[in-house]
Length: 57
Image 1 (cartoon, rainbow, N blue to C red):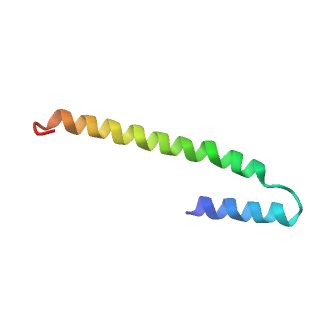
Image 2 (image 1 turned 90 degrees about the horizontal axis):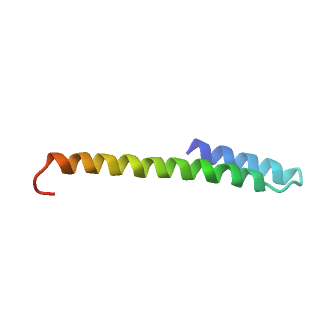
């Protein structure tokens, strides 16, 4: 949540100075995507490990 607030604050400041905040979005996008992909990989690994330890899945 802090990250989003920081991004919004930077965007507001850039807009107040008359600059377009495109670079902020471009920097946020890969960062967010990386976290989502890593979370998916972690969930997949955990599910596969649980599946190998149970008989009913």
